[in-house]
Length: 341
Figure (cartoon, rainbow, N blue to C red):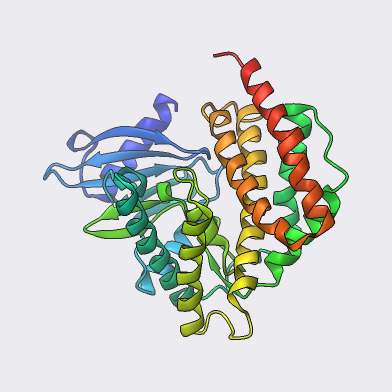
């Protein structure tokens, strides 16, 4: 980040608080998978705010601001937006502290308890936030996400052709997603985007929210970066969510648990394939480090869900699961050993 932009950011943040630049300090520059950067602003009285720097030529902050206002007015836990300068890409936000949810995963029982709490927050989001104003998670978007896998993981990084089963798997995963009720979807409901603040979980990084499948945020959480649950644990979490969704009307009574569990596994396969593509793109195109080392974790997630799906004995699913096990995994492991340390 240039010194000019730092100076402009600091001056603007001071003005929003009725201060001069010398009265405040910025610290803790943090990045993410996007081009956004976050700084902690310390005011003379010791209170803090967070300044988001999102260069407008790289990031559109308008969706974040609009969604934050709508969700906050609906009583959902999101950071307050104190001030905006969309022309420069500056936002002044409530400081939610330094405790993303994954830092609280101290043991298995505690980890499961926090995941149950987060699933309750997903229910709140789906019940309180109207999805009508959000972009549709439709066939085109689901397809574009899936296509990241052959484009960036297979072709660009592994130089590996997709298997013959890929076109059919692509169609089937999209169909499973579209068969579900449409709700508000955060779209990256991973532990890193949940902050513990004042004994409550707050959502951040929701600018890519869409109107989409009921199970998507459940999958983002349960098949996320930090945990790998057993098939029994996964099914128990999904079942608790299923019954709550049935009780409050988000899921019709005509959908039995076995069907919803299959939809969750298909959604998890779709997201894992997308993530494999995104992580390779972040590495190759955006020159961001640290993502390739996470590939095997999401490959585990993919194999877990494909294993559950192949119980249906759909030939393409069986063939694709075999290809992932016998071709994709060895190729990824070999490529990783060839990467410079």
